[in-house]
Amino acid sequence: MKNKLVFFLMTVLLFHASHVTADKTILAGGCFWCMEADYEKLEGVTDVVSGFTGGTAKNPTYYGDHKGHFEAVEITYDPDKVSYKQLIEYFWVNIDPFDELGQFCDKGHEYLTAIFVANETERKIAEESKRKVIEQFPNQRVVTPILNASTFYPIKGDEIHHQDYYIKSPIRYKIYRWNCGRDKRLKEIWGDKAMKLPTASP
Image (cartoon, rainbow, N blue to C red; front, top):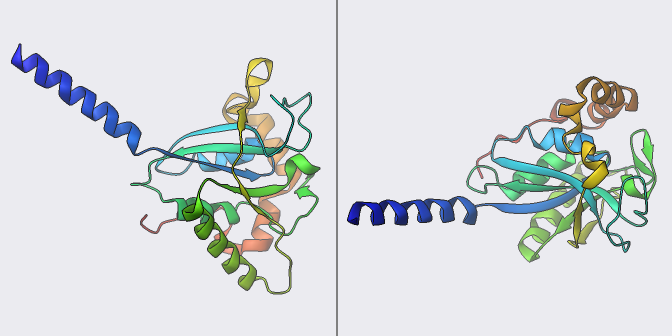
């Protein structure tokens, strides 16, 4: 009986520990298919969910009302393996921070970029990272805003096929990404840093 009690307590503690180390953040970088595919490559990222945020419409949908919302991803990560700073550094080299109309071939408010911060610590990190990007490109205007996090609405129901789209429809996804010119433009902006996974320790 004693051994069973010890085993039960250890199981509870391990379950609790695996959850208290998980953090979440929300980023908008244009097409959420691409953002999801890019962030799921990162070690320490445990889940990436496509959805909408930042607007006033309740329960926005892809084919319906999503006025004022950004296409975004909610990223769940282990801060012991990848830091918030690394996630933000990776964000910049996966977007065009100068595009005020959308991202790449996708235009419209829903495709604009944004960093959504949940607290002052995240805001300071995001602002410092943006300052470095501005310094790197003194002759261009960085339009990506840093906004307070708001309700995130995950893709669901009849539109759930948008989640993990790059896995469910790999050929269509690759054709879309190529035709949209995303990777070509990223390399034009960032050179060898484009789409590069952060290697620094958290």
